Image (cartoon, rainbow, N blue to C red; front, top):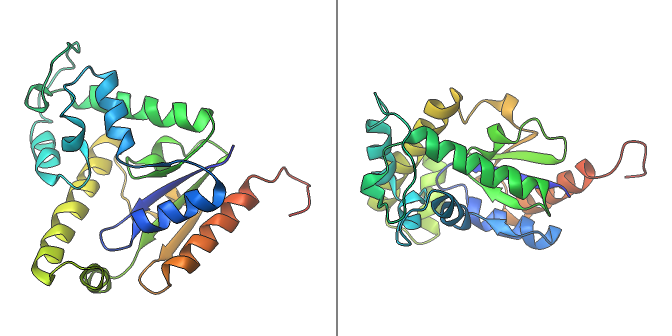
Length: 212
């Protein structure tokens, strides 16, 4: 089953487009479910998954700040996010979740460096949603955020995501070589973006030589 990974910068409507693609392909949409699955693998407390969400930059800032000189520990029940001091442990658990999903029934996966983790799989379409910063901020404001909040979130979330990909994979989210599709989601309506990704995913899933 074809899966889709979506890397989305702030204001590019990644969640909206991801949900739309998942609905059209009949696949689950995985975003916040991934941190919960990772926390389960690491035996972390039930309240911890929310801290792993990409919308919680304070956690990512603390995690990045803790990267130097840390060694992987053994997971124990009842660990809290403040006890979590093993970046490689977190990376390995996240990769295991993504690979399990791609090897199973497939999904539309938002974030978590899926375009890097699953780049060797021929059955995974890798998509980047982006656009000029000011256009993305304007789109976030149009979606209901005030401008000051939108600008702060753009800095925090884009920065946290870039640090994550850079530290764990020595990659850049804007590297076009990581993707099959790079779409300016500020220039095209969400519905058009959804249709483009859906058609590309279906084309990827057609066996070589079969009519498309």
